[in-house]
Length: 98
Image 1: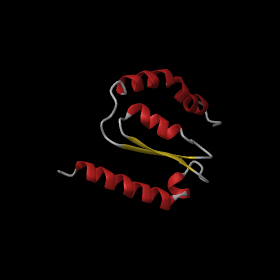
Image 2: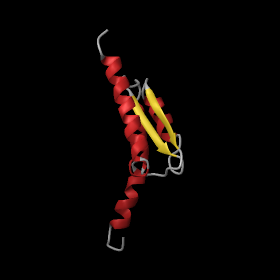
Image 3: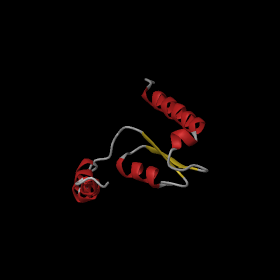
Image 4: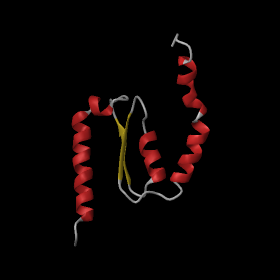
């Protein structure tokens, strides 16, 4: 951070928030038709992940993982793997011809 330009470069990300918000608004005008899974750790994102997914997709599943922080794949690997298996099984069942 002490090198010239480093602080400015790291803070520039925040200057793009209005532009990113406008792009997101355009990209999410129509909800996604693909299923989404979104989980947040109780001590980090909480319900923000699944609520964000619900805002942009017709079929959003997930929630809050108790006793978990930011690194959900590292902290609750077994839980995430089980949820992914269930998610993929549901998606495969929905796509199977009847």
